[in-house]
Image (cartoon, rainbow, N blue to C red):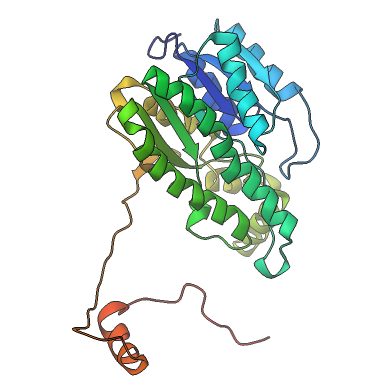
Length: 313
């Protein structure tokens, strides 16, 4: 057991499986006391089971650590309050919050229902707020805290995930502003975009797509397909926690409001958005004719449509 987070109290949401489980175990391995939150739902948010959270708590206790389970939903304000209250009631404080809980409801935009949009927003974007707000109250009083939010490269755009993409990129904006609101109190707020093979990323649709790709490459046996598949999804949940733990240490106190991409052994820091080109008019309003002339030459030159129109089949 390490001691870098000795006597710190951490909450990890969605910690019963996958990346959340790996994060909880890594934080515990550095001495943190854990609240392991998980509803035990399927990837689409249906069903419930207390077993995943309880099993992770047992793993932590076998390591010599301390952990308690929590089964509240991050999708409600009451659930977020209860999750943080569990830490304070059991361990007397809350120092670290890792917002990791998530589900999927993928659908092409033109077929997406309002319910499919809403539930993703509730779990991912609202869930991040529902836990961060009450945690920040305690952290502000302590004048110390570490919050790590979970975004995704899907936030940069991914077919069939308009709801998920919007929520995940919303988390980035939330992270930047929360960092500004809380930084002066010794609290850092950062985000990660993890890429790892989990039950949320390795869906049946993904497997079927990979089988078609493998077949087109002449890969026909199950053994060869498994090697191909494992090589493509080489990043595992265990690749993610070292960065999360680092962001929760004293050594990372100067890192605030930033977002990182982690894929296997590759770790990247994203640049912050900035204006890359500007055109100005001396007076009056831009006319349509002026924009048609000036924009392609001076503002958007070289830009390529990422999804150009295709001829109807």
